[in-house]
Image (tube, rainbow, N blue to C red; front, side, top):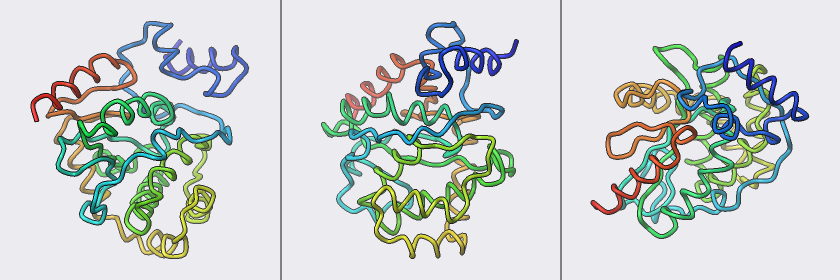
Amino acid sequence: MTDSERISTMLTSSGGGHRLLTRRQFLATSGVLALSGCLGGENNESTNAAVDDAVANAPDPDDPTSSTYARAGAADRPTVTYYGNWKCPYCADFSTDFLGNIVTDYVEPGDISLQFRALAYIDGEPFLASDAPRAAQGGLGVWNVAPETYWRYHEYVFANQPPEGEEWATTNKLVSFAEEAGVTETEQLRTKIQEQAYESPVRETSQAAADAGVSGTPALVIDGETVNPLSDEQRTRTLIEQLADGS
């Protein structure tokens, strides 16, 4: 039985739905700690869940417009880069769980700055279905037209992520998510998505991820080292603290 089949079996036996048994809980209980994250083939169910307030209210940098990519915390602090994919169910688990601890413990006190970059292509091909690049552009659109609402949008989408097997990241769905998350500039966002205004930075993220050795999501790059925060929370904390102490 594959890891995906084992996860699916445990989800089914627990009543279905990834919020009843997160992948991190599964990894911890089953010993599959080497799993590298989202590599495709997994499925999840939309839950209409509430957002994680710690991440939704993450502090914005003083000048959000100076960064093309979403950022939380003071821009002059050491940066931890989070590579995720809007369609990745592992990222949904990380973003609605451990990520909140990172924001509370390290971003809010001013120890680090957190940057999110959506990995939508690997080797030039869409990663986790053809709509993944559109989802990435939607996130960049929210950050660039209404940065003060970005992190709430980020959490809302991951908390209510539709099944990965569906090509759900249409322009209408992304705008609908934005409206539900409280984004005000939705018509401007719609235009940006339709015009593919952020295709270049989405492509640049793929190259940056490859250069960092990122091959799956979620992944954090901390002072040049790449770590899977789902399978090694303690290592993640150690690297962040070393980065903050060395600043």
